[in-house]
Image 1 (cartoon, helix red, strand yellow):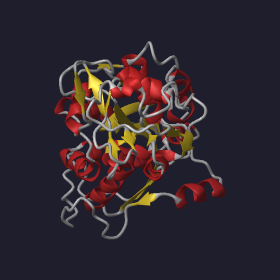
Image 2 (image 1 turned 180 degrees about the vertical axis):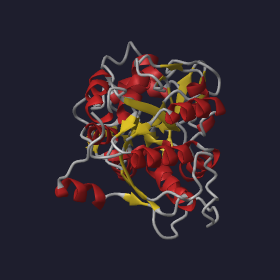
Image 3 (image 1 turned 60 degrees about the horizontal axis):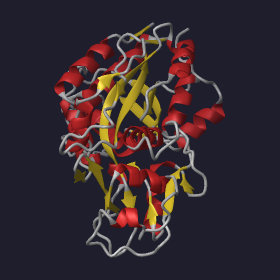
Length: 372
């Protein structure tokens, strides 16, 4: 069965109320206003029109704003909307046929791959990597400007086994810091989150003796502070002395962030450090032709690598019910993958551009999408 749309007016209105829309002269990329300035090799030169809807990962929000604005220069008669409701919500909407594509910090799992064939046809859906970003560890501890945390210490903090900032395990790697006896407030996502799943995958790989929980979209440890979406975590950490959380690095702002133990070093987050991990990672075995899901090398000890990283995907159907929707999906995601699209995301969100090798693979996968 091919993609079908929900006809519920309430569902459509709810999605539209929060959507990002390509309209007017909103142009955070700073590119010119000519319709051919987007640089998308797959673009048909501004001859498309229609509407394209997506929803999902809030980590992509800043990048998506830039992508939508940049794409407006390429295809001014196409309106793209994106509802940043979280990765889990985006995948659920795709499975329900309510959106044309989903943004997600985690690729479809076995159950979702089976379900998605009901709306995307027997070929299922393709996870196409479009956004690489560090997951930063923000903290709020006045007077402590630098903080080193080894993986096992980080795991014990988030498992609430280490509960005060002057704990000996923290102090051992921060001899010059004046650590207070303030209680630690752990801030986690309250919604289903690909960022949560990525962070838990890192803890499982890098600190297996200190972290007993299986990676999941939902946070497993009770007793901390829960907040919805990336912005909610940042707001709670920023307003709560003694707080620590996890967030896509694009949203960190002025908050202090911890350096993470990698081998014998402590590494600050960076786009370059995140890209090193992706380059060292292997394809996931999903059994779907053209799928580009990745199993990330979380336990790397390579110098300069930052292993708390997420790869965010645009999940698209292999087959749409009409050719026009397929053309819009291929053209928009093609722009996102292009050098201009990746530069726009890097400028807006501090993400790491995908490599040329990954871009080539993604463009081949996108060519497999059909409609009608």
